[in-house]
Length: 326
Ligand code: ADE
Ligand code: ZN
Image (cartoon, rainbow, N blue to C red):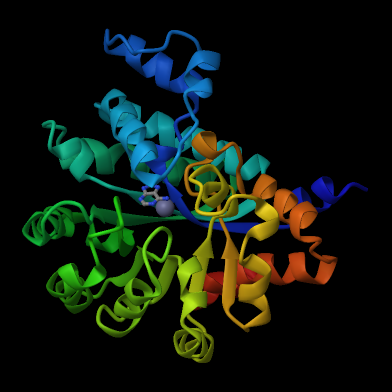
């Protein structure tokens, strides 16, 4: 049995992925065609070859451009359903998915279309393939806190179907502290919270997320290793870190997977999980992320099993569902 078959066969969680970052190139072209739009690329191969990024910002530019093909309820259904199919084939039994409504509502897409399509795809994936999924609403840190507050108000009709609130976008220069009021409001409304921190930004952003925003999880979190007091705090609280190794490689957060802090994070007792982020853009779903790390970092079978189990343990599910997953 190969390492890949072993990893693919393990029941896994994907706790950090972005629906709008999961559009495979062919679907991007099909959706553009559906709306009579012309993209800058006319084949899937050409589009895929544009996925070369010097940093987070250059990726986000293309990612936000790609968002323009998502317009109707059917589009949101199709992209979500396609991701959940791939995830199921990848052995993912629990997917926690971000969507950032600001990319769509700013162009006049109604929140109803976005939520309707995504939630229907989640229900169908549960019914047809048994995949458990949860939806997280992500706000953009490069926009204002007032803008984020408006999103919070707009999503309240669906509050019962939203498992948490997150924040992504261009990190450096946009610290979590800028959104302290927003995340307080989100927690007051009963939402769990998780924010992207310490991907390109410093350890101080991870500390702000933990201490000021009082997050339940951290997305990425790599930079925490620069502050050992913070590492001890994260380990003591068992705050899950949703690490995305191939994303880090493709966005040049690390120069080489062999240099990735994953193993060091585990050695410090952190609750590390491995996730996909934006699979087509970074060339890998959860299995590919684990396989690449296994080979670059020489992970043992117990280490792989630990990472996978950490993911299932960090999932935001009910007590009943946790018993099924674990
Ligand atoms: N949005 C989608 N992927 C992201 C990432 N890796 N960092 C910040 N924002 C994102
Ligand atoms: Zn992300």
